[in-house]
Length: 212
Image (cartoon, rainbow, N blue to C red; front, top):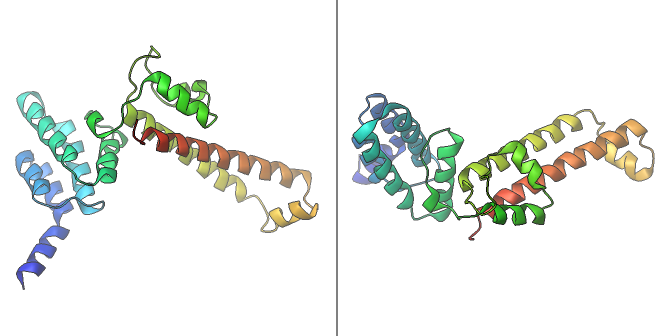
């Protein structure tokens, strides 16, 4: 087997390698595995998730402080800005305590208020789905708010799909032709309402990830 083939074969095992080392609690070697490979959105990202979760659950004291610095360096060293952002969000998505705030835009609660108003989402709605600071001048936890916005958008999208299953294949055509009954019109209205809500929550998450 050629050197190039060996490198490719080795590369495909990065997620498995990281998982094995994490189970052995050999975190320095697990970090080194990721440091030596070019970051990508599939296996490398999966390996990072395993490492972040295992380190958060299994380390304390001095070793934890070392690991926090090492994993922070990993994230901030990723040249792909989009991947760097998603890694910071993964840390929240997988319920770890790691905070990669430097990889994301910084917003105050007032900024969030303005962004939410721009997509017609009242702050009272946000208060129901995410954690907000007490003062309007305080900085929000961008990753947490984005993850919660995405989860809310997905919930609305799923509800729209569930509702649409109760419609006939010709429901929209019947509506246009004026043949739809009241029940069908009501369901179509609810589906569109849920789709619009999903769109607004996704848009807010997107704007929060745009440069401040």
